[in-house]
Image 1 (spheres, rainbow, N blue to C red):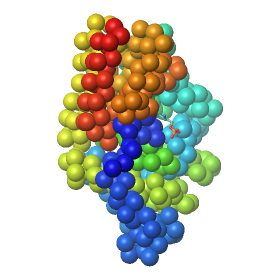
Image 2: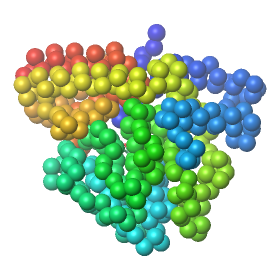
Image 3: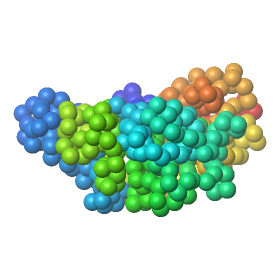
Image 4: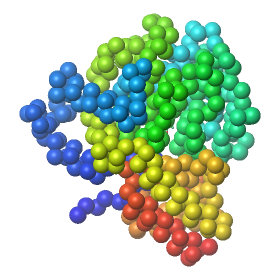
Length: 365
Ligand code: PMP
């Protein structure tokens, strides 16, 4: 027995229990190493094999071809805000175009502006980031340095159901930090796709970058070394010491997803069932719960909603805790509740939350 709660944290977030147990079993002595993984060199063949296995498992899950590099970096998703612009915008003579559908896109463009000409061609701020653009809301220039969007805005719970329109001549760039691995992705439509691990793929400390190899040559070699993607690609993610523990756990999560869940199509089906069950309760609550995101862009991963008052929100959070339902408080910019239900959130956790929501609305509505 453990005291583990159903953890709805937006990130770092719940991990599969079987993965945590494996890590625990191997903590003192990694098989074959005579030491903990935490204690061995990143150049040790045992670790290099672990790194390659994590890359290969991601390649097989996402169907990533050899036209793309799979890199592991540090600095979180936040460093990518700068790295993308430093590699693909700075010195290009072009402008980078951004679709802003939430807080993380806004942060990304602010960093890109330090590197060059970055413009928002769509910004949903007037409606407090509750929606996506339609095709007629924006036009991407044929010669843009890239088109940037965030596939799932973690704070607002706004997710693109599929890729935005983008001319073939323009590399499509996505921050998929909070939804990579939640469903299949047509990777070959992207120039670059990245995600920090601490939501859907592992612990904090590692960021996965999937980049079309021809784009590696675009950057100026004088780009600060850590930001220069080619350094990471040419040195197989060992240009400097990589976050070994985070990569090791990420590899185990990827294997869990492939071998225990059965891959991304199976995962998407489960994620749809989980999120649909909560949205159904919101829609059926006669306005007691009000979803933040418009219906056509509700996230599979972050279910955001408000209650009739701040007092009821506080009461909801306090009572939920007595049912082992934890970390449900919404981000201050949206308020209310945010239930992050990443891949590792078990169905039982979502069912327990759903029952609690139904009972709470009946008692307080
Ligand atoms: N992008 C998105 C979509 C996120 O959810 C987050 C983390 N909440 C970030 C970027 C920033 O990630 P990090 O803290 O790893 O820099």
